Length: 159
Image (tube, rainbow, N blue to C red):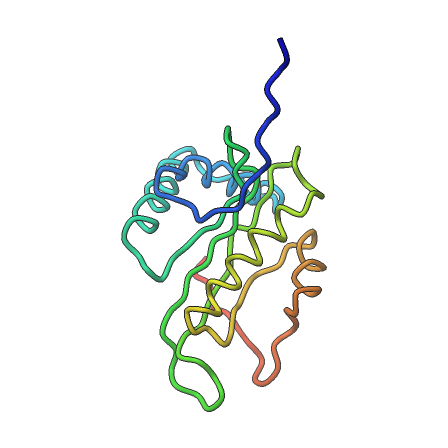
């Protein structure tokens, strides 16, 4: 008797029932940045993914699924933007791009990232922001992401 051949990993939009796996991949991404969330964070994150994927048309995630678990994921969301000449009506944000360490360097990160990027462009985003990790920066730059032009972007964060 032969062992069944695993299915080829498939790119697909995430569903609410992927919340636990999306959270697992987000934890991998956070760990790569040296961030360890409190124990109560995991259920909060799962609930957030479940709710957003069920109810928010401005929120998406794409995943690479091998039929037994998610190998990679990326999240996108967009908001209305103040009108500006030459820009579309929305600003997008890509976050939580993560690939399971055992499945890296196989193009999965590029696949999920590109799917989210294309979804945001189709939605009307003419500007898409992200925060790049040192591991992901070269990929994003090869896909056309660059340092913003114009006024210097600044961020305030409550500490």
